[in-house]
Image 1 (cartoon, rainbow, N blue to C red):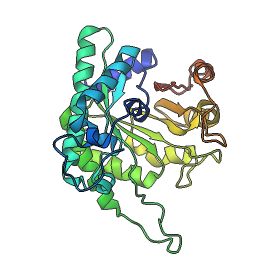
Image 2: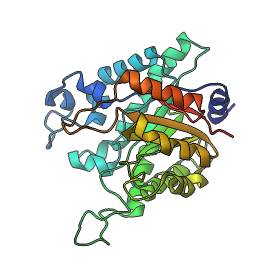
Image 3: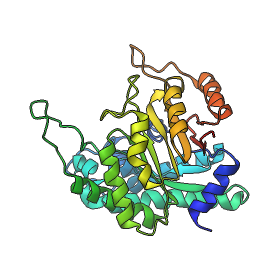
Image 4: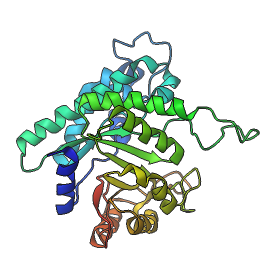
Length: 314
């Protein structure tokens, strides 16, 4: 049985739960520059603090511990610590030569954790999703307000960067590739093409998750959620969904629309609402839990820092 068939079987029976945020869990450890550097990168030319992906090499104990916390809490799927694991994003830290290794180790650590928990609870298998976030450059928008036609990166450069990440994640043992926090659909298309080139047989399914950036109901590059689905449906993802930016309350109408138009499983992992005037978040766990219960009851899904999937309503 292929991994896609196994997941589709499970998803047809119940909601699957994805782990929660990695960044805030790392912040709880109050790590220093020395933690991010370790001995190996002690003399690296650039500051590394804040480059969370780096920790799979320098503090793997912390990343493994976070994975285990989420698995103990009941997660069915955990994401690799590789959200910014492309040469484009890592160029800010002069770490481009280590991108494949970063992704390989991120997947290996997550694989180690899920295999151990699956052995403990064979009736509840656990899975690894290779996290592929957006880069710090986009294909649809110019970073120069005086030159709207300018692009800081080409489509081929973006595709090649994602391909390097995909190779590391697959070689490290990922079950699924999660192309998430999609703010620019053209960049997501580069990631989709990269996956198809690295894995032409389609052995590793993909999940696509867009980000509605505010209450305009559009991605940063200007698409509505139904237009986004039309643009990526050709990839035949295992699931499609929405994550980041909005809280469950604000996300609800867009999730309902996606559930109406998409022909696959639906995923959702909202933030704790939009920040208030003081930069704080007002949507706490009890409220989010009630909203998520509504998502599940109406069969167009959620999770609360634990993302879920189910087929759209008929």
